[in-house]
Length: 270
Figure 1: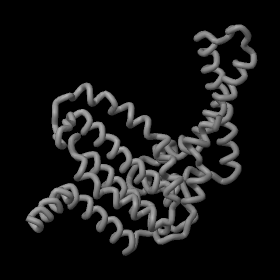
Figure 2 (figure 1 turned 30 degrees about the vertical axis):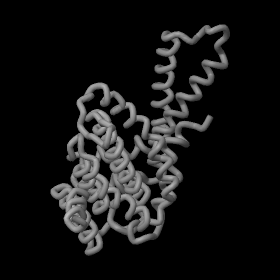
Figure 3 (figure 1 turned 120 degrees about the horizontal axis):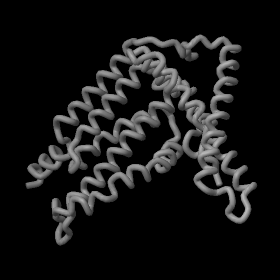
Figure 4 (figure 1 turned 90 degrees about the vertical axis):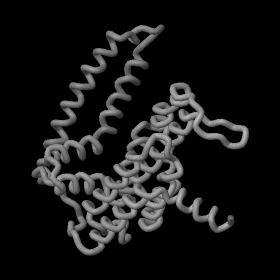
């Protein structure tokens, strides 16, 4: 079975992608973070029954994938790994909202199915944008951008450490569970009491590992600042990127582009 950290965290691959040298990679992390936040806020602001109006927003992650020369297949696999969370969030909607909403010929679609599809679409758009952000900026760059945009320094550092070392905690937990299984016979040692002891052992191992990591960081000159190899600078490309995409997002939010195009085509072919 593939390790959890390989499937979910896969830090090495994302860091390798973030080390690219395209114009998108060279943009200041703050510009990409602010643009992505505007994108996410705009997407989640749509009503639960809106689907067609969300479709044009797919141009943003698609354009960044092409501009950043990112592997679309790899990012798609990462998106599918997290997709079950969105699926189980909205799967009960068809039963909670059975009122008819749309009619296609002889087929009636309830509001629950429409809202379920809207949840999946918004999940796909926002998560793909977040993956592209990390793949072109690195998580360290995102944390540095948060700090420079006014987020508390301790928050940015803790977020960075959580991302970097969460897979270490998962690995420690897996080893504890594996050791318990090898020492259990006829179902002994598998109760909740033993589970509580395992949690305590995991806490002790975590504290010990954190102390060793902290000492290693101090030996390597860590002083609490997040540093990147690329120089941080806000220039004309960053301003054009942020303002241009943000204006496009706001325009798409105010005007239903698919509806306008449908109305225009209907008038042309009438």
